[in-house]
Amino acid sequence: MKASEIRAKTPDQLDDDLAALKKEQFNLRFQKATGQLEKTARVKQVRKDIARIKTIAAQQAAKKA
Image (cartoon, rainbow, N blue to C red; front, side, top):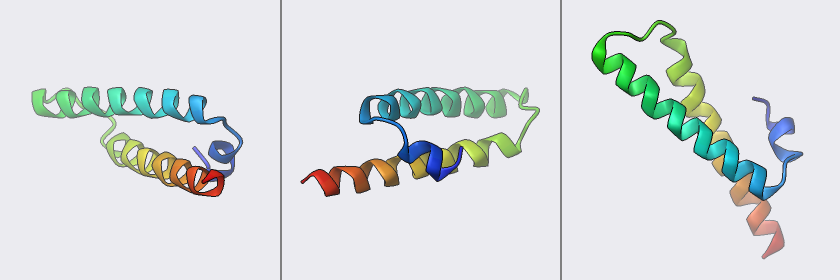
């Protein structure tokens, strides 16, 4: 997910995306622990997407305040 795509979303959409990514991150960690993880690069990608969403959400909140 690109930063420009994230900036175009509303705060509610960002919250929904963040929840979905955290759920996916949990599932990936569970798969890794049980030895069923196939796409190991996805763990890193999800982690970076979560950080990207949190950063942009904080920037948008700072602009409003």
